[in-house]
Length: 366
Image (tube, rainbow, N blue to C red; front, side, top):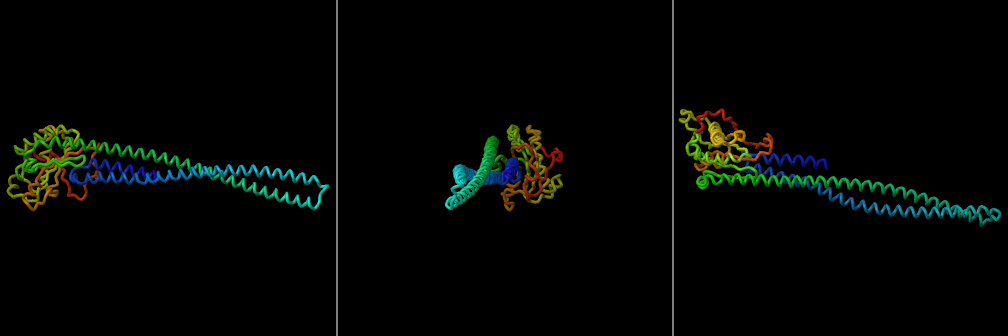
């Protein structure tokens, strides 16, 4: 049980940290689900340990009672042995005295001797039985004491493991609360930079656990079907970039998203994009490069990606929905010391186009 508990604790730690480091496409639901799963698994891991500890306490009480009972039985047996030994000696003395009176032997004397011999044999048998019972009681008492010591050792071991689990849970909770407080502070530092855009619904900030997302609709940064940051977009990114550069403990993932409307053919003749993947990727890289090269954000903390039209926020069946889907998401997350593994990536999603900045020509930036 203790070995299984250790393995469960190890798995819980991995699950908790993986959930803490997960960011990006599934941030609204995946991170919260992983955090809840972590807490549920830790509660499940503690339950059998608490149950085993309760049973050990009960067993200890029973064993201590049995030990006391066996000690009493052993003492009574020893007293009985002493009594029978004394009686046996008295009979032996009496029998010897009777044999010395052979000159006065009579039928009555012979009968008395036979009775004394029988009593002596009976006492000897009782003495042997009591001695066997005492040996058995001593053996049982020794076994009980061994079990009691093992139970106490097991209880001490479980108490130690419970202490480790409780310390880990307390530390995890404190760290999670500290991370969430840091995310809240960072999100609030960016929330007031574009009050007009936020009031009109063109920009939003959403926070979940240790990640937050700043959403900028297409019209705030780009002209339709282009990946060149316009003048108004540059002003907004300058304002945001100055604040983002100060958030040096966060990683930033710039995601370019589009609607599913077909690109116009005349755009292609003007050096446009042949599909939504290219447009989304170009916009993500343009914003990432602007923040790194114009605003001083550490380029080692920035990644650019796209999912084209395959991660809409609203339906593409209406003009309002398509407008909301044409956007750039700035996904901020606190790293946990190592990059998320492939196992931590969201499943059943369309492939993400990770495009290096060098693949986009300089003309895509302002």
